[in-house]
Length: 416
Image (cartoon, rainbow, N blue to C red; front, top):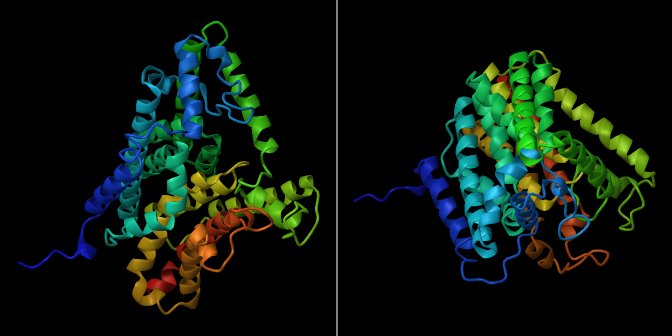
């Protein structure tokens, strides 16, 4: 009997296998461990306990330390409430299992978006995308973050907006914005693309859901929660913008344009000047996505490409971005690989395409400590996480953005 060729397995099988591997590596691995500490998850659980005890007025006060704050809208404090009723160890396991589910669903929705854009690449590219982002995905699980859920909500918005299901698309984007405010970038995009019904549906869902949640949590002063949430966002972002772990576009500019102690800077600008430059770069990148009225792509394919590009900007443009946050880039990475594989007969002859692909693989490898140890490098300026000092992840994001943007406007030439 002829053996099945794994390279021809459908996407569903690969997604299932990825799910099993992550189940074994994280929730099942930690099942009998007494030393589980998921740093960000502990914030969600603490907030859930406050809600359960009727202390919703303290939703946005620090938890385990001054910097560990709940930064999401009141709606998510209500949705996290079940965590308060599950014992600490069991809730951490449940959270990791949910994260596996979000990962699998994100891969599936990203694959559906590729299909919507008329790509039919082999299923194994999902595994390739996961491997490229495995450092960030591991950090997502070990910190108990919500980035995969965030990415899933944004991708669901893209899928349903392409399918013209306005109410559902608006609901998912409203949930995404409520979870992490930088998803607002997609709402601004809908305005520039004159999708006013979708923009209105998103606003209605956002205000309705959060107003109801605030009334349930704090009926005496529902507006207090919204004000405190915005105050926390306004103060916590700038205060941590130049920390070593921050991998945002702003932090990248700070590393190379200000004297931050790592001596990688080519200029010694003030932080306000660095912030201005980062903002100009971000606005420029956003503008080149939304401004062209004409595109070699049809409407569906352009929507998918624009969505992938905006996902990258949503990450880079956040004031504080950690290693785990780059797990959000599964859609852009899957799309880039899908295009490359589908057009491989032409792209293999393009030096630019090969350079982009090689750069992404190299930057992915550079996020692993074993890469640096192979060259005898164990630290840089006393910092053991060399890739954080060199800002490898923002460079990965910028290269991925450039690659997708180049592919988006090269379609006519590559398929001629």
